[in-house]
Image 1 (cartoon, rainbow, N blue to C red):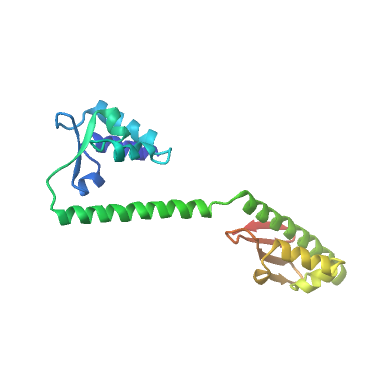
Image 2: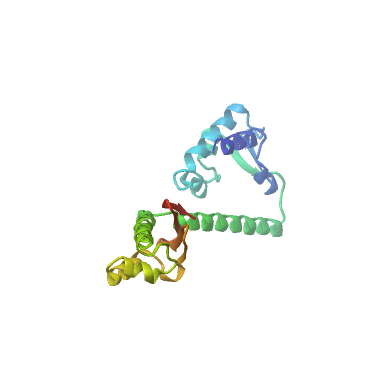
Length: 213
């Protein structure tokens, strides 16, 4: 975020950021001259104040008669066209800007939906705890049979209550994504938690070590 503010300050001081120049726009003072350092700093401050609050400071431009946003009002600047544009060029630029806005909004929505929720965290934590239980059952199975098993059915029997074991597995894990390996030297159990990201959790041992992917 600091680099973004530095970029805005340098762009304001130069009379327009790279994006504004590509759009054929420039930032000027009331007298038409390039903003000085003080105006550039004030405009950057307005940008910093506007962005965290749903870009409310920029939306002021929609209601202001001169199209001035909060950063312009603080700095005493205007955003003007660097040169007159043909109607077709203006339309194309507007369409490109609209595509960028839709893309940014879509990325924000996707980012928000993919962010882990408390329920996701609880699902992954339950999956980790469940693997530790399976690791203890593996140790019991080895004590009785001389080696570890790669069969979930064997663990169900070794648990002493296969019905409760199966119900717990279905509650914690996605049943189609459980992988098991077992032998004389060790075991590896991998399953997918019931969170939105389908986090894969793995335990292997001995000793039991849980990892996420």
